[in-house]
Image (cartoon, rainbow, N blue to C red; front, side, top):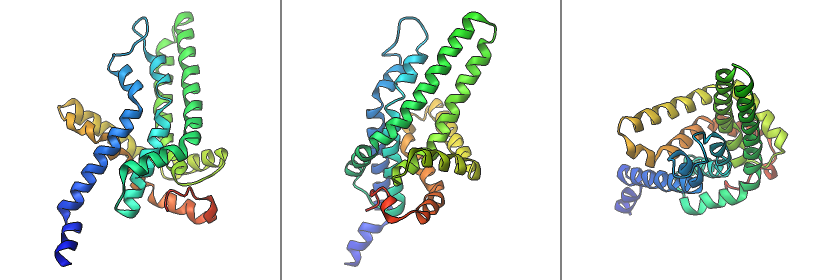
Length: 235
């Protein structure tokens, strides 16, 4: 029994499990975001050189996929064990509608800003300013997703409750946003310098660290809620 326990709990066994979970979770995440990847790689494009609008549209599937990956990483943190395929798609199905609604509104916001940029570029000299605003909006929405979607992945709440909690914790625990941006920059830098293998784990690494930073946040929210308000994914 001792040998069996050591085999099942040794550092090599645990490390192998984490590598496998991260690899599989990352694969499912990018598989569900294949349209965006095809646009980024230039395989799918629109007439002309500006694929920004097409890119914005292909961001829509990211919200439910990101929620599923965040949920899976959160379960790894809590339970140290997971059936990645089962839990990922369970979370994807459970949170799909809620996530896609938030993703839809964000795509609408970015779409409106894009058309504003195109309009002002044709009628004024403020094109650079409009581009800066669009980029800043993309960055902000990307950051706020790392507050909204972890909450969606754990709790059944009204949409305005989720938004209010996300804004509250954004200002209260802004270090999570700073960490997410720092990790994104680090992963991007490593991949540009030839560390392409990091792309096999990048999304999982990011989501794992975000959920790790949000441990106290989610526990605090859970303590304020009745048992029936929780998502049910923790069972």
